[in-house]
Length: 144
Image 1 (cartoon, rainbow, N blue to C red):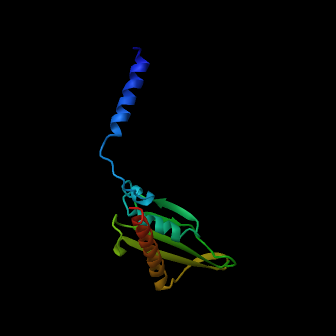
Image 2: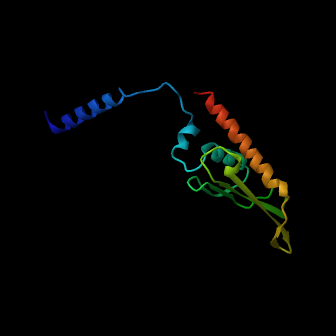
Image 3: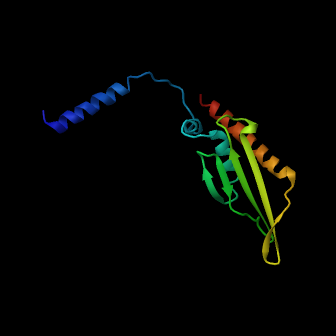
């Protein structure tokens, strides 16, 4: 038997044996599968991206749990812009695993100046992300 044929036979045997292992019929959602390779909660991560998808993303790091948007002005708004920073601190789906900061600037004399942000804005974004993350989690449970 020549060498390439022996190698092929070894691969066939290994492949056949690997399929004999302990298999489950349980389906794991795509998000749950990604949870094993991420340092942060995958549902919070996906929900954060979904919630902020109308804003351009500047930086995102799933290992560090950081999402930062570029400055964003809504349609027809020229003298005000907003930036959002999301920090996911844990692999568990918990309210205290999420931190959101919102920054706002107003254009004055052709220069951007920092402006006050309504204290409820970050909380509203956090709640939206948490709600979406819970919905994603419940949706993945339907596939179990």
